[in-house]
Length: 394
Ligand SMILES: Cc1cc2nc3c(=O)[nH]c(=O)nc-3n(C[C@H](O)[C@H](O)[C@H](O)COP(=O)(O)OP(=O)(O)OC[C@H]3O[C@@H](n4cnc5c(N)ncnc54)[C@H](O)[C@@H]3O)c2cc1C
Image 1 (cartoon, rainbow, N blue to C red):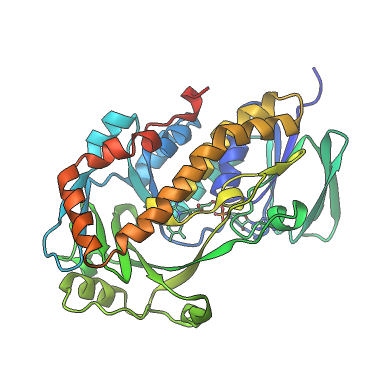
Image 2: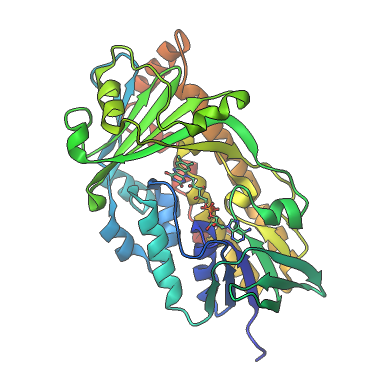
């Protein structure tokens, strides 16, 4: 038997760490290059839908995630002006029974910590922090990688493949593969965590809450393990109005919506704004150098699927990179298996952004459809999304 294959990955985020774990299980040697000095996750809450959870469970993370996550019993949807939910979309046990895994919410940092702790247990995963830059060149059927190490030394290695999991502003995509920059979506996310007491009476703490308005929408869910409630508010901001990013609070008017007023007051000036961009690049690879996660296909978070797609990517790509005769072959097959599905998720996410922000009269039609579809309408509508299992697909 020859030496195990080495795969180099740029980025120790959700995509990079999940892929490292999935590869390590096949005995592949993995070197992860991370720009930051430590594992650091910005942002707050993350919804983990059943399609992603199935892959995480297969990596042996089921128990660790269950201990740090919460399963909301449903999603209360409040179109603007309503004092009671128009619809409560069922989650809880019913979604787990139907799709084979729960729909959970958790703090992003907890998921990344779980992935990192698991990766550290593998002798064949090497995570190099504080890598300011790297160069990658095709060499033979593989790649040569050169990176600056924190002590100033240059490390060179040969690898079977190089995977850019370096996020929405991926250097692998733009500099190494000559691909496009991320496109600003016209939307900004404002994120905050507050104490549960601060939102008492405004939301049901056993559920996720979705508040719709023509100018913004707000997603709120509890993170009991952090004794916190996560708020993500989404506004439309033109490109020449991005000075709003220097603010600590969005400029929105709650009108006489007392629920929104209370939620905004709970956060005050403690919002963290985040520009939302999407990535549409083709192809996702060139020879033995490829992309996964946001680096390949960042999307709007309005179906809560960006991290889920990164996790699915890892589950699909790992066995291909472990077994294919060359990396180009693995990435070609990966694209064939993933492109259509990821593009569909990007489209649905974009459409949700429009649906959530509908004004009169379209909002009236939207609300009627939502009421008609019932509390389990999303089960049928999203069967293709939540029912998917990379391990069970051809
Ligand atoms: C407000 C909001 C809410 C969201 N909610 C959800 C949700 O509920 N569910 C869901 O599934 N998704 C959600 N998403 C999307 C999700 O956050 C992303 O899709 C996911 O984090 C992408 O993971 P990634 O590993 O591809 O990229 P990232 O998380 O960006 O990780 C990239 C990593 O690469 C490193 N890196 C960057 N450049 C370099 C370099 N040059 N060299 C080395 N390392 C580098 C970074 O430091 C980082 O560690 C949400 C996004 C937003 C903005």
